[in-house]
Image 1 (cartoon, helix red, strand yellow):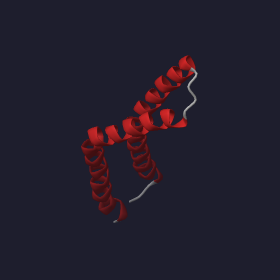
Image 2 (image 1 turned 60 degrees about the vertical axis):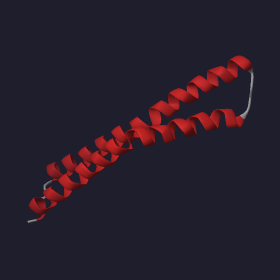
Image 3 (image 1 turned 60 degrees about the horizontal axis):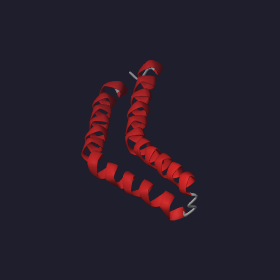
Length: 90
């Protein structure tokens, strides 16, 4: 039976995994952007492509590097959710 406690547990687990995946993709890009902005401030170069391209490349690199883990984590989440769905409905 789907109780409020089990619904909160399902949603909390999904939010936790989503936040973890977003952190894996976004945090390296933020650090790269910080380094580029420090470089731009030190050299007074105000080129927009200089700030955009490294962040894009870092994000794509993280997708390549952590893509297998991301897909495995999401598939585990969905498999576990569908296993619990049968028990929770009836």
